[in-house]
Image (tube, rainbow, N blue to C red; front, side, top):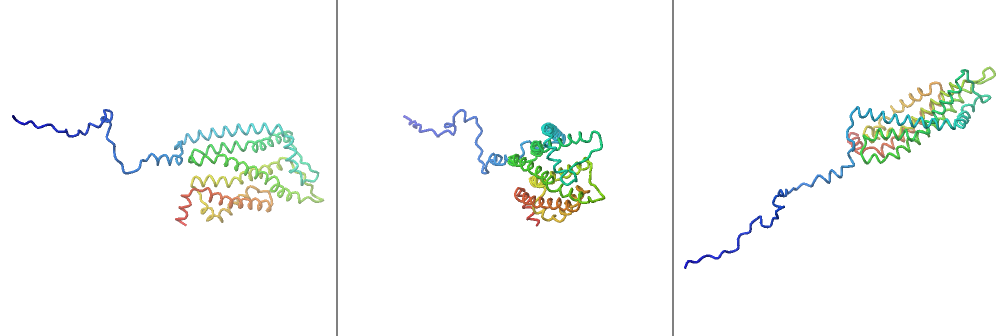
Length: 295
């Protein structure tokens, strides 16, 4: 009787341990490099979420921010006009402090009335300055990274404080120096009785100029965050900046004496030095590294 071999255990089929839903799935791909998902997550805060804006989008954004700022200025004007008498007393106490008799004259019928409106407009600008600075920040913000946009509150706060500080510096220090110079020529032959319009014009010119000049540290902060300037660059060009500063002081105060121009120029130089410190602290590290490489 022929011997029939007993069937031994069959060789294992590679597909026996694979479940039906696993059989249709693609085989896993072994990768030696780490996944880029974590890198993308790590760099998520480094990319502006809005992306690049077109030129028309920039214009539309600018129009929107200007519209909001104008509405804020109108609200500030109405608030200031409600307290115009107190504002008038405060400003004219400074304007007439060094005038014999303590009075200014006006020669046009509507001159005094329009002066009330102009004074309310300037006071309204000071009142609305925090919101105006906030609109400025919103216009700048699309070009910043996500982690830089967290500086909105410090930017608005310090920009407002600097603007108001510049206006106060002009009111209490710069304008009195210029006005004392003009009033010093009074003698027995000359009586100093100026019209209110030229006096107010000089006052507003100096006040707004100093308010804008005091924004220099914030301007340098923004330029540093965009990588346009660095502390080393500002230090290298200090002598040129000094020349430009005194030219600006001479242009802004053409009718004033040398002393007010020196005071304005000296304050601008002090702000420039402060700006160097601001850029050194908040400037982009890549810019600092490039300066060190080329220094």
